[in-house]
Image (cartoon, rainbow, N blue to C red; front, side, top):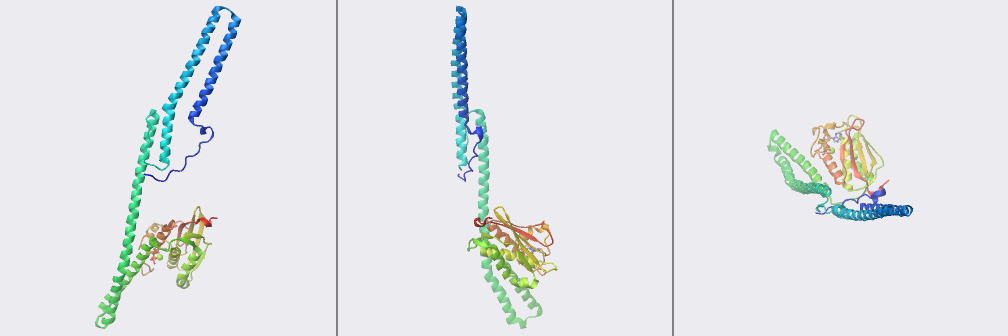
Length: 381
Ligand SMILES: Nc1ncnc2c1ncn2[C@@H]1O[C@H](COP(=O)(O)OP(=O)(O)OP(=O)(O)O)[C@@H](O)[C@H]1O
Ligand SMILES: [Mg+2]
């Protein structure tokens, strides 16, 4: 299995840049030179002492000392060379092997096993690191499989919602129109109760049509064919306000805004997003005329938008529920609607790579919604 390589390792700094083998070489050379110099100095002192003493016994002892020094030097040299070989084959080479294996894993081949069999400490270390690698890879694989399964079942659900809502429209239209025709054609022969029943059926069918249309809109978000382009969110808001002009006029609402940025996105969907949020802000108004403000701030690579109003507000405990499809907090005869607006908004924002939430800690009465959208590279401040 090959996945994205890891970022390159950090460069070592200071004296740590020198590989350990070089350190041993330098230290070995220095120790050898010092030892050789010490032996030469001892031999020179011995030669001078022999000239000064001139007795055969002392000369003999000095010869023995010379021999001992030469043997000592030879023994130290042999010992040094043996130590260098041991270090090379028992420590440095296995470290090199392990480093090479780790490099292969870091380059993206996460199935590559890590193993060296000597020295004991390195063998233990490599076996622990390899167990961790295997465990992480298997967890990663399980998560990737689950994500794939989730994507597939989401796709199927969306397809189902789309097909069901699309295909249900026609029979429903038939039910509604034939029930109405029944009333028109045979109304005179029906009593009041029958007419009331027909009225209920027509109302039910119309409401179901509304729900099905909303469901269709919802399942269309990620199937949009329009694609993404550079969108001036200020213009998207203008368009949304134009669509809401009747409601704005009726309620005497004022909508103010910060200077809105250009983002990469789908023009139609971003207009829909503003439209749903401002429509809610106007619909769920308290006594006073609605005041709505659309704000924006830059936070890292994202724009954070907000839509705040002076309406009836939302209790923080409903912060999650309101985003569920067809979930509403009020009876339909108090505030009309099907309860799809916010679910649609959240889907649009997530489709654009952002998040939408209710700000439970916003100041003042009314509700404040916040959402993020990735800032397109060319408008960076
Ligand atoms: N600005 C707001 N102020 C107060 N309550 C709100 C606000 N926006 C949403 N809500 C609450 O969240 C619920 C869900 O909102 P959503 O927009 O999804 O549905 P809706 O407006 O009732 O119906 P639809 O949008 O389908 O016409 C609303 O029924 C309302 O109770
Ligand atoms: Mg709404």
